[in-house]
Length: 598
Image 1 (cartoon, rainbow, N blue to C red):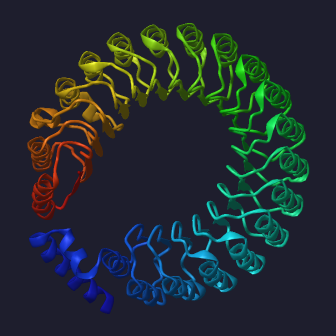
Image 2 (tube, rainbow, N blue to C red):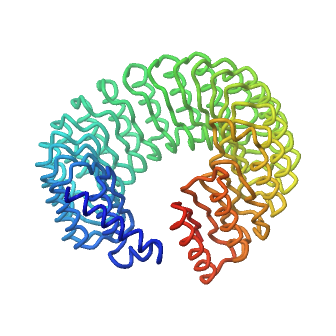
Image 3 (cartoon, rainbow, N blue to C red):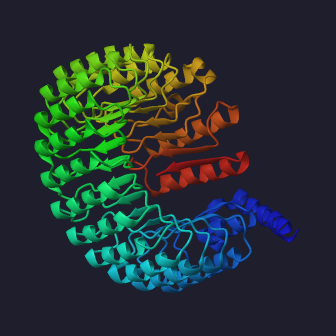
C-alpha cells in the first residue's frame, strides 16, 4: 500500500515537472542517476540502466538500501559511472545479501585490484547472481587473484567478462586453478589482455579437466604457436567447450595445423574464430582438410589471414564435402577472380551455409558474375557481405539479376564498391521483384540523386525491405525527398508486418530546408532517421521536428519512441536549444519520446 502511494505522488510530481520544465528539470533537482534509481525501485522495474550517469556515493547508498527489500530488479548496468572506492564497497555489500539480482555490469570504472576485492567478497557469499561484467577496470593479476578465490567457492555465476584488464600469464594461471574447481561458469571473456603462451598453456590444462565451460574468448592477446598448440591439445580431450575465440593472436601456420588436427577428433566445438592469425595458404589448407572430416563445427572465422586464391581453393573444396557449416568469414584475404570462381561453385548447392563474409577482397565484375550464378541456384544462403571489393556498376548489374531469382537471401552488403547511378538502377529493378530481401547496404558508393530516385521508385513497390543504408552517397535534398516520398506513398507497405526501421542518409549533402517534404506524412513506423554529417541548418532542424510532430498528431504511424540524428550538421548551441525546447512541450503533451541528437 505504501509503495503504491509513494509511486502515485512521485509520478504526479514528475508529470508536473516534465510538463512545465522538461525531463532536464527532474535530473537537475535530484540528478539523473538518482532519478533512474527511484523510478526503478518504485515502479518494480526489472532493469536499471545507470550507464555513464556519474553515480554519486549518496545515489549508490539509495540503491543499496532499496536492494534490501526489492524483489523485482534483476539487471543493473553501471558501466562508465565513475564509481568511487566507497561506491564499489557499498555495491559489494549490497550484492552480498541480495537474492534476486541475476546480472550486474561494472565495466569501464577503473575500480582496480582493491575494488574488485570488494566484489570478490560479495561473490563468495552471493548464491543467485548469474552474470558479472568487470571489463576495463585495471584489475591486473593481483585483482584476479582475489576474484579467482571467490570463483572457487561461488556456486551460481555462469558468465564473467574480464576483457581489457592487464591480465597476464600469472593471472591466467591463477584463473586456470580456479577453473579446475569451479563447476558453474559457462562463459569467460578474456580478450584484450596480455596473456601469452604460458598463460594459454595453463588455461589449456584447466580445459582438460573442466566439464562445464562452454565459451572462452582469448582474442587479441599474445598467444603464438606454442600456446595455440596447447589449446589445440586440450580440444582433443575436452567434450564441453563450444566456442573458442582466439582471433588476432599470431598463432601462425603451426597453430592452424594444430587446431586442424584437433578439429578432426573434437565433437563439441561449434564456433572457432581464427581471425588475424597469419595462417596463410598452408594453414587454410590444413583447416580445409579438417572441415572435410568434422561434422560439428557451425561457424568459422578465417578473415585477415592472407589466405589468397590457393587457400580459398582448398576451402572451396572442403565446402563441397562439408554439409554442416552455417557461417564462414573469409574477409580481407586477398581473394581474386580465381578464388571467387572456385568458391562460387561450392556455394551453388551447399545445403547449410547461411552466412558468408567476403568483404575487403579483390572481387571484381568477373567474380560478381560467378557469385551471381551461384545465388540463382543457392536455396539456403541468407546473408552475403561483398563490401569493400571492386564490383562496380556491371558487377552490381549481374548480382541484381540474381536477386530477381533468389528466394532466400535476406541481407546483402555492397558498401564501398564504386557503384554509381546505373548500378543503383539495376538493383532498384531487382528490388521491385524481390520479395525476400530485408537489408541492403549501399554505403560509401556514389549513387547520387539519380540513384536515390531509382531506389525510391523501388521502395514504392517492395514490401520486404526493413533496412536501407545509403550513407556517403552524394545524395542531396532532391534525392532524400524522393526517398521520403516513396515511404509515405507506399500504401501497400502499411499493410504488411515488416516495417522500414532505419532511414539512414548519413554523410551526404542534405540541407533539410524542405523538411515537410522530406518527412511528409510517412506511413512507416520508422524508429530512427539518421541525417548526421550533412548540411542541415537550424531552420531545417526545426522543420524536421515540426513535420515529425505533425505526423504524430495526425496518427501517421510514426513510433512513439523515435530518434533523429542530426549531429555534425550546421546547428549551433542556440539552434540545439530551440529544437530541444520545441520537443519538450510536444513530448509532455503527447506522451512521446521524440529525441533529436544535435
